[in-house]
Picture (spheres, protein in one colour):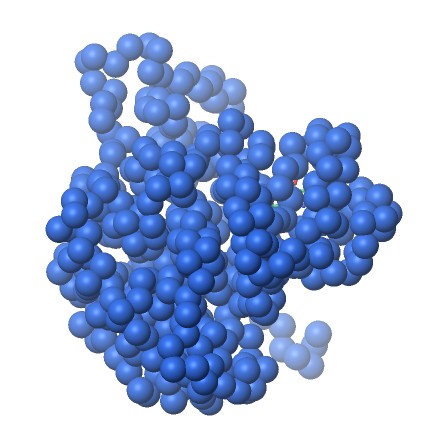
Length: 445
Ligand code: ACO
């Protein structure tokens, strides 16, 4: 699918004055008309604004990309003020209700829902790429017994590139397709191996008779029984959780995937960078932090004191799982997860931390500090409670996020490769350091 280009329609004779932004440079008194497309000006159009011929021209300064679109995309739509999330136009609530993860992954990657034969072929391809080379297993065995599974995942994903050197040919669509299948198929295997490693348990090989999620649960939890019985409620819960996490437009890890991928490197290496970004506590590591925070609060009656501490800390202490760069309303994914929690708890037993979480949400949503800043629960606030109830250790939470997000990273990476407007990502800087000066020998400093 060809990407939208901001040049359609560009300022042609048909451009009306409504499509233009007039900028006056008071240093020179000159005015410039900048084309506005999709409510956006091109930062490069600012370059013509100069005080002299040898002036570099005006740049925009936007630390943390608060108001800069780095690409056009047709994959995921978010309206943060209204709490809307859609993949390829389909509301997240409908996908969570009726789709499964592999179907949603196909949708993200291809733009349309698969027909039955397309789905069967896709599911077969993924199922038959779940094995990893035995050397990858050996590599994982080299980690310390208490290695964080995200650290193991970052390294092993990067290492996969050495097993598939053909993956370097990122401009060949067939080569890309094969790597996409491998990455989506293998990440649950790597994740489960990382978990089994920390437990000192033998790794369980993939089982092709099981669904994507059923196979993952089997690789995680199979012990000595001849056949591990996958609980259908937990299997479905994972389908939903992976769907909810599959994509979220230009977030930190996706930007890492696109940014690193823009150098032309293979997708295993780019995905390793994306996982690295996801690992951080302000991103995919937040669900881990939510659980630690709830455990630290300890009981419902201590919630008001904790909220007070957050408010008085001047931004030092955060209510983890709250707030979002884009959502200034309830995160629609958090809503779905909250509803699903009850079904999971019927199987696993209620997570005692849920009461603390509900009380935190109740107090925060009625407190002026959070209301004024439009801080609502995000996807991470309730997901950890479900994972913990399913017996996943806290360290595994961001890993679970990464499994679901892999399809989104790859869809975004592919869109970037096919986008004729994209080049190697290379931001500018505003240099505020020393002027040129002469080196001083150490003895004279
Ligand atoms: N608890 C308390 N105060 C908060 C929180 C929070 N969770 N989040 C933001 N604020 C406050 C900030 O201190 C700031 O206050 P100020 O105006 O008095 O300075 C104000 O709200 C605006 O916050 P910013 O940090 O400017 O918002 P930003 O868009 O940069 O950050 C972020 C978004 C990183 C998600 C932030 O809300 C946060 O740290 N949340 C906690 C971590 C978290 O849950 N991350 C998961 C995000 S979802 C995901 O990645 C899947």
